[in-house]
Figure 1 (tube, rainbow, N blue to C red):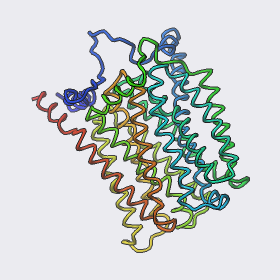
Figure 2 (cartoon, rainbow, N blue to C red; figure 1 turned 90 degrees about the vertical axis):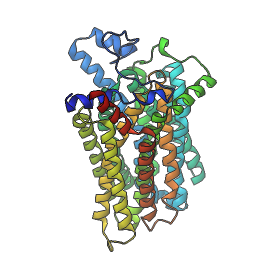
Figure 3 (cartoon, rainbow, N blue to C red; figure 1 turned 30 degrees about the horizontal axis):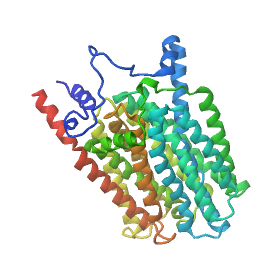
Figure 4 (cartoon, rainbow, N blue to C red; figure 1 turned 135 degrees about the vertical axis):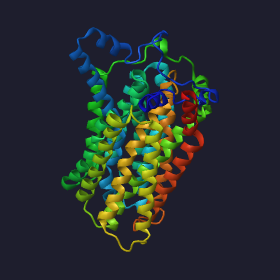
Length: 463
């Protein structure tokens, strides 16, 4: 059997060996002779629209849904990254310490983690549109209140509520993608979403830096409120329901908890979930610490920091397209994931050596290069962990998406305050957190997913 055929079979059978040990069956493509319960490429109104329209119209419908989902996945980076250049200004304005102000990031991230556990099962029961619209409306109110917060305590509380509501956008965007795609197509779609949503991290700090030139940090929340309103109108008018009633889970809270327990009992699903979560935590350690590392330690202006953050986001997007357009379908997703984790580990180790002075006193450029490599390698990890995990379940995409998102945001929320434990004048805590998270991610991937066992099984079947 040719190498390309082996690779394709490896991707289609990611869970073949471990299905026996978990409760969740692998969502592999169904052979042509077997009847399928629902069309794989689309569902509900999207299916009807594409079937009835000519090819050009079908492409426009697909592009429209892709753009909407990309906009929804951009809500978290917009909520976090546009605010980053303003962190030192918030510290001065509300007379709070750097560690306390970083709690506003932690609160938003924790809200997004916990909110997904609620919204994910809700979307499996009631469909995707209603929970999404409700979450966006609450997001608008919470963001508007943040703009007028007179104290750091009130800002932390409403950043938590903003995160809880904003969770609807990201968890349902992933669930809709699972409704529409499967296997390699899903991995490619996640890479496409990274291209679209990756624009947000590029422009968000730039917008935030420019906002600080003409107004104070509260202007950032005015803009986020406007973004929430625009997204709500677009979703209400243009996003079709992708989960038809016959595929919904009509159980209550007990059934939702049982479903999540079954997902977590699948060792391979849990391995991908934890590997992606700790990789995301390494990324968020950078998000939380970089404003102080770049601006306070290395003396860069908010505008310079915004430019550097944008360059790193360009690397994230570019490698994401390399993953989606070239690697997926040609190289095993497990191999790509392992490569990404190895690069993140190497970049984190280099940053730690520079921060501790092993190479002497280094300037901004070497630190920026290390952060660029780390950020770019995230595109080899995050889309593939999501796709590999979601491939193992079709019947509970909302709950699976919630667990994936919650693990990522919860571990990230824990990592956020750790990067500031030694104050704002050293980059050592950031590098330590990144390195530890990368090593734990590799341990979870190798210890729970055990990709070499599937490779051995495939070679044995071919011989």
